Amino acid sequence: MSTFKPDDVEVLASQFSAASSTLHIVKIVEQFNTLEDDSKDPALVASDLSAQTAFLRKLKFAYLEQNAKDKYVKTIVSDIDDAPIVTAEDNKALFASNEEAKQRLRAAKESLQHTQRRIQELAPAVEQEYNKAQRMTAHASALSQKILDARLDLIRLRQTHPHPRLTIPLADQKLIDQVTEMQALNDDLEAAQRHMHTVKERIRTSAGAAERLRMERAEAEHAVRKIKERAAADARNERLFVPLYDWYTSSLALHRSIHGLVTAESVSDNELRLQYRINASPPFDLAVALIFEPTTRALASVAVATDPEDTLGALGLPENAMDESIGVHVRRNDAHCAVAAIVARVRGGRE
Image 1: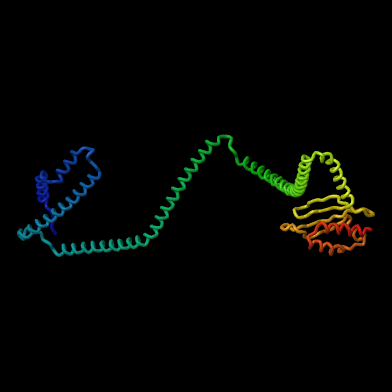
Image 2: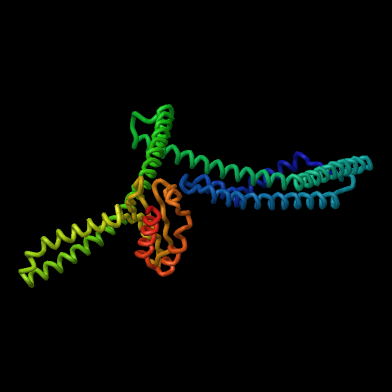
């Protein structure tokens, strides 16, 4: 084993002092110290530092190599008496130190392999936890943004709606009042709907009667227009108009009294109800309902009713006594003959 002597250290120090003026690293240090603060960029300093570190490593390797060569040459060329003596004990000690270093290296390698296997086993779990942490971080960021947005909305609402604001008890009471009000409005709506249906029925009935009266008015106006035209053509007919009207009115009243027609009512669009007064003992009312087809307006059926209902039986007429004659007139589509036959048969039964 080779050893350093004090003279070698002094020689190395003197050589370094002599060569310090020509070493590049010494000049670089002096230049770096002379630089201004603005020129000391951290990136440039790090680049220079890595370059200088590499250079120092090479210089160290060159020094060790040169030192080993120098020792080797000195050992060879020196006298055997001055050469360092390497004994078997030195070799054994060196071998033992090498074996110990190998054991430490082997243990360090096994520990490194165990650590690598452990890292490989834990890497998926760590990756999952990392991804989970990233998702939770993103979720937390989104929640934070939502909280900020909610706070901004709350601030805007408070600015838009200053005090006094609606509290929870007042809101509950307002809800109860609104429910009660809605129930009352629903009741009113149902009552209004029922009243509307009743009014619609009345309007439908009134519309039929109004249509009938409109037709009668149109016929009367047409008749009056013709009479006026005739009166304008012949002035002498004007003196006869009032007696003719009186005669027509009295004739109509006589016709009603003879036939006993009391009322004529259009119940619906396809039903006409006639009511006759039958002078019997006691007198009773005979109701004849003429039902027409809605599309063709042809006579479909005739219904007979009396008040009281057992009047036909009291007269000796069964319920189906007029079905045959009514059927004949219905098939002929002759409403006038059907009504005349019914009235004549009832009056004939009375007699």
